[in-house]
Image 1: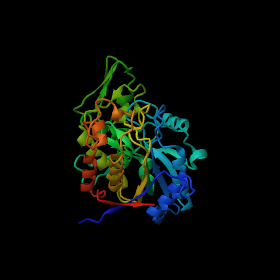
Image 2: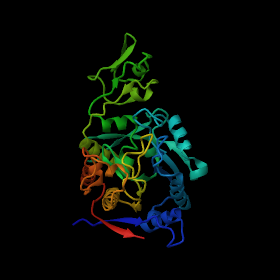
Image 3: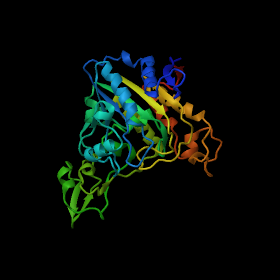
Image 4: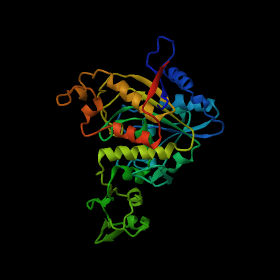
Length: 372
């Protein structure tokens, strides 16, 4: 029988030890062994979500500062990072993304380190990373700055998600670290297409397409899917956001691809993972809004094992009684509540990602919860 992974846990209570929550997180990181990593002189990527403007459920910069300070105390050189979004919003390119991050409070003055957008100005700065054992993805398209880091730390806001069931550690890493083309590969079973009403026929897509798939005829672009290889360059460079990806992949396969992208990111270098189960909104932080939490705040979790971490967080949420006046207790979601995420999003199965990740060797679903 495989050895259980250790997942370390601390609640959000502060009075018992007369310490604030940031100090408690530092104590958790030490207990979990994050300081056993050799950070000396190393570049350290801290992957998190900066929040879509209008959303208030994202992790506050204070948490990022705690992790960054811990890394610096060990001699490391931390930076906060995320990659640009596939959809059109406040984080679709590096400039808008940095503006959104600053609007939500992320910057050197508040976090003690710099913010770098992992896949560059237009979401096209990527590294092709082989996926060992990948069934759906052979080469993941990962933001170049993410792969340039010597050490990788994930700092995750654990919450619901409309396509994967919940947004946890794997989602933060796998989908979050994909370039725009990488996100398209995970979401889409097909190729991008052109929304003609937005197209101005500028020809930018034709100049960036290396395969002759993008052509402009009568002032409108079109993409030949027989020639298209799905690289996403046209999507990243279109000045009018007229090129869109087909979000037509099944949720189960999407979950598998998220696990495979996670494997590409973490394979072969020191990694550590942190998840905060608070403000558990029913939808991801990519929305420009957030609904009331569906369960009470639970606490902080940390582990070297991303699979065990997600499993432990999911189990902790399942153990909570749904909050009144939340989406989970609305008419239509008033189910038996054996699985809060499935009740919230019946077309999803969050266990698929963990099962597939376990098969890939990312970790184990068997864990020992160590409370501090």
